Length: 277
Length: 133
Image (tube, rainbow over all chains, first blue to last red):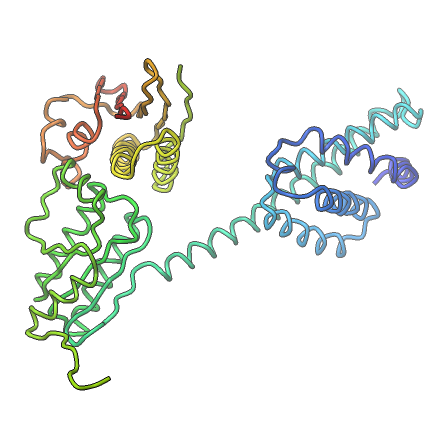
């Protein structure tokens, strides 16, 4: 790093910082400013500027750990990447403008200064974006795993009766899992009746219906009966409008009704105990 | 007067985003839960068609105000392979992907107005509108 630039930034650190925070705040869209308070914005901005200056000092190890921490923090706060990359750009613009004004930069040294500064800036930019991206990727893959974990559980509620409650959007990946778990579970628990509860499924379109029909057909093949419960009135209407044929299904509007029906099929029922208080 | 917002459909999760957008708009305009479900289901079908057959496209949601009567217009635009026989795809039970084949005729029944335009090799444009009663 060029000694000239370094000493200049070090000497004008406070002024640069102030101007930088001001411009970043003006330039940034509401998205950033809206989600955090002024205080958080200021302290985070300061941290970012400090980070840039640490890099200037050339302390590589310290800089890396701090950069990582910073990237993680920004991701956690939900700030866009543009905040970081445009922030870095603004920093460069401010430093250059000030160097020009104070006469540190002359026509003769302009070119070499610029080249060196640009090199330093670009490498830092790449590094920040890289760390930011990996932090995001990590978050996304963790969430994917978390989603998968709550994907399609099969719960044995009574002997020979199992329930699969479905919550959330069903995509192709999940549909596959539902089918697999349903069949594996039906065989493992020796189920006679399998109840699929769709109370928590927001939209039942033809694809979702198709997957459910297929799953039911497969369950029938392994010797169990499939029942669909938790069909909300609005879902019932859309299914009718779509013209989806669910006549080979027994459907119930609630899981409770479904379980009662399932007990009936397996020749059992729930009775109140007499003589007990 | 209309206010438009769009979602680009590239992967399966974009379908959810389009659906969410439609549901919010419908809710804002005062549609009931049944109509909200109809509108979101229609969006889901159209977005899935884009994802399955065209690979990439756009779902746009317009708020309409026709003589004081509010409505939602869904436009599905892609530049995919197009549909050579529109009459055939509007028949119940016709599907090239092994699905139920209820998608497009279903959307027509879910919504109040339905328009489809397609040029083979050039793409498909579908507009479907639901009015608040």
